[in-house]
Image 1 (cartoon, helix red, strand yellow):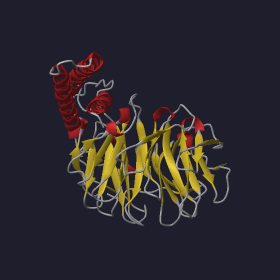
Image 2 (image 1 turned 60 degrees about the vertical axis):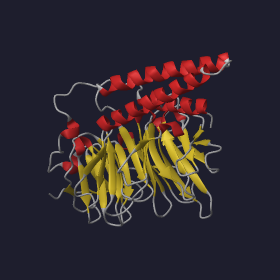
Image 3 (image 1 turned 45 degrees about the vertical axis):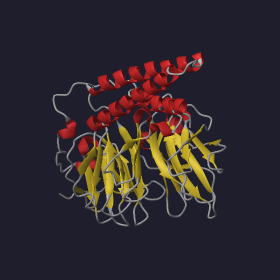
Image 4 (image 1 turned 90 degrees about the vertical axis):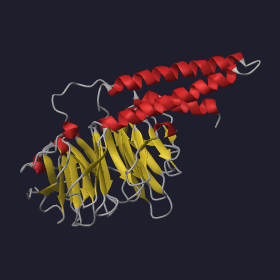
Length: 396
């Protein structure tokens, strides 16, 4: 990679990082306010669920609420969390070690199965990282200009290009420094860990973070993908062959075949947001990708995202999450309590007869085969067809 191309990619990274943030003024910093313990924790707005093992679950949501269960969701205990911001994603690569992410650039870690959580990164630290990157870009751009100017007969076009990049870098540095005064305002939206050491976090405005030391350090690596418009990155998942996929805004899906070091941009042929991808193995080395999003849009690929076809999801309502059940059923859910399921070996999605109209955001299949749903109004349980089973309780 030439230096000029490298600088352009770094400029893209900083442009993504300083895109359009306006921070409201709060008298209390929710990042520093511990989550309030509540007897109604299972009834608050909850957004994501992760299985810790067969019977252990963790759920995150509004006001920094994290609740955990060790008995398959029969009872729940609220965890001690050092922040009250909205939490949007959670993942446990091992039964004890897990991560949660949320608004204001917050990343939390637990090493005791979710009972207590510690902050690994927040928006203040992320702002500092962005400024440091911007300063490095200015230094490198300045060195490139000086290198051209030291030549006896520099190429005028290349010199002009280098000077333009220096001006852009200085502009980006100024913007990054200004944004530090806006405070921590970058929502992180999803987290996925390969093991207890390596993981990725995706978020608004093209934010992509990577760690290889269990979150001891987090690196901003948005420049690994072509996302000049800084579209939101909504969800990250892994296929059986190790390929990573990110569902994004504006009809983009991103694919990495090298463990997240580089990303291809895929365009299924739709300009709205994708909120997630369900991976359906076919029993061989192939698998089906089902990408879902706004207004019930659903796209299918059987060649790792090279080509896509639009499917009839059976609904025009936005689909927020989806999972593959153990029997091969695809279970999709979203706004207004919509639930669509596709039985194994079938192509058509069927609507659930469940009349609960509360929006669903998070899903996980429990050890008994039923499905735990998180969303507006908290937790509820359905069978594999989406019909209600029971309502969980909170144990304090």
